[in-house]
Amino acid sequence: MRQKTISAVYSYYEQLRAGRAAPLRSEINPAELKAALPDVFMLEQLKDASFSFRLAGTRTCLVFGREARNTDFAAIWEPNSARRMVLAAQSVLATGQILKVDLIARGVEEPEFGLEMLLMPLSSKPGVVDRIFGCLAADDPTRPLTALHRWLLPTRLQFLTDEHMPRSILPSVEQAAPAQPANRPLFRVIDGGRRD
Image (spheres, rainbow, N blue to C red):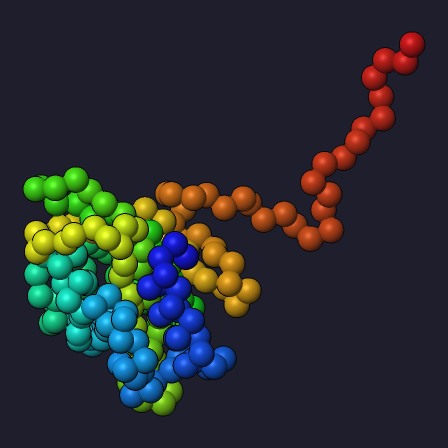
């Protein structure tokens, strides 16, 4: 994780989760996230399995260039990436894993810039994992942001495993090595050749 804000929110979330599939929405205390509040957001999964923003911090809205509340999650992404990102968000709820996304913000009135996003599973009530707690931070935290309309383009998606090691889920960006069958050597030495 490149950004202090992302790392701080991740640590807070993991403490709150305490080994469970997901913490409850009611357990999140905004006072404990004071410095990160402008960068956090919450998504709700709707009946059609799409996602809508329940709330979003001020810096998050500036990145999007518009108020995010009640906005379709798919609408913030570059059109060719929107479906992939909705499926990725669905995977967060289905697997209970945290997803880290490296991405680029593109607008027509400024150079593109990099960001980092976390998507973390959240429960509205015990046993119902139907929300996502998120954080979005620019690679350059000193970059001034203005409310310009931007598309987001994912460049790398990684689930964070229990060992905190990233695992790519975006094959078009990072191909994983094919799995080797158990007990099968990677190579074999064949005796032969010239003997002088």
